[in-house]
Length: 109
Image 1 (cartoon, rainbow, N blue to C red):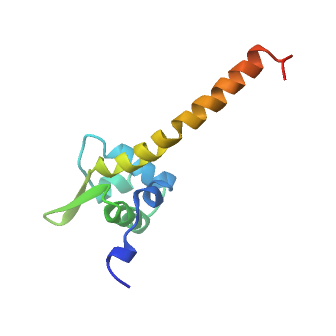
Image 2 (cartoon, rainbow, N blue to C red):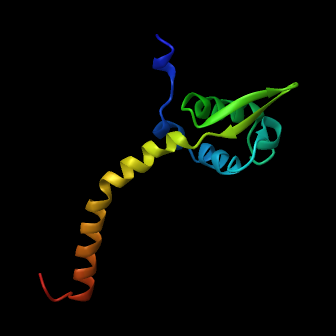
Image 3 (spheres, rainbow, N blue to C red):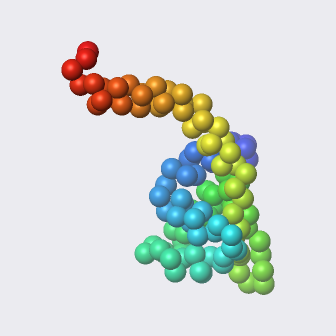
């Protein structure tokens, strides 16, 4: 299996609520694994696994500083999610418009 086959994509990475919370923690700041782990009721090993997925998806950047690894947010890959959601916005707008029409005029078919 090639190295690229093991990489996670952005959608896989953000599918997990813990990973989404980690991304929120890293907004505007660099954090060490120990500091991230203190924010969750799970083990450091579990946090490291989540950070591995986020790293493979390109959403965080690890950097060794002495004996610890610090992580920073790399938000650029999230543009893939934004583009995907943007594609479906017209569909949602149409459905919301239909719902509004139904609510405002319940007697019409």
